Length: 285
Image 1 (cartoon, helix red, strand yellow):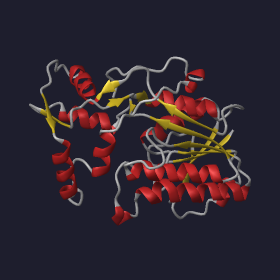
Image 2 (cartoon, one colour):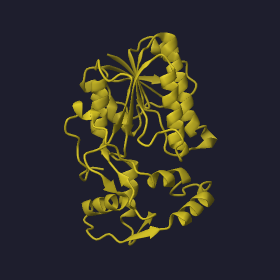
Image 3 (tube, helix red, strand yellow):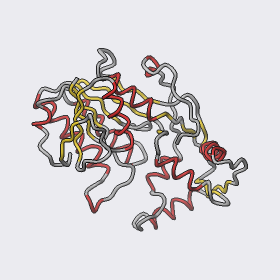
Image 4 (cartoon, one colour):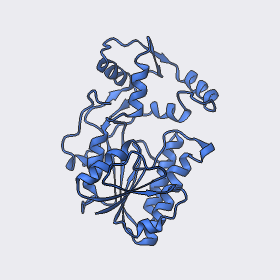
């Protein structure tokens, strides 16, 4: 199958490249820079916000869209609305124009109408755009991803080296971490499925963790069995984030704080029909 992969050089995209090639697909990656590419994929240079997509669509059977950001950088035009919604809109419009019917789209668990965070609201706009257009789609909403250098878990590891670790709120928010390798394998198999099109799947791993438990799990993997946690009141954290959101290097944004205090779990197990035994969270972050 001829696959066009967008967002293919990022954290998830690198794993998806490998899975697609292992399944024998002909893979092209659209990216601004030729980095993090395996030799078997074709590099298509261009900025997805402006490049002419039509020549790429002319030799594509299925599009896999992994484009997404977790933090905005307005000075470079990388806002949630641009990277989540506008990029998806122009991608789907080009698909329709060129008769490309199938799209596998990466969204995020927690995406819904009326969400608190701009991240989730713009992810929802993108999903709505896909539903409004004449394409067959499978939308995936994974929880926290781990494995192969997850930025979230690297952040936790760094914090676990502190004498006392600050936790926003009471740390009881639940998460359901899912392996990057499982999601990549799922995507590669979905390319050739004749079922599931038109569906939205939520993707969670085999075990739920509170935020406190996630920190303790990571600390234990580093040999630190007794991790002192200091729970910072949310009101104080949000105040600090509002003052610090325009400062370079400030560790957390208002959006990220909001999402850290929303449950990120699901009872949806449809994806187990393809990945029968999801990988549990171990020590490979």
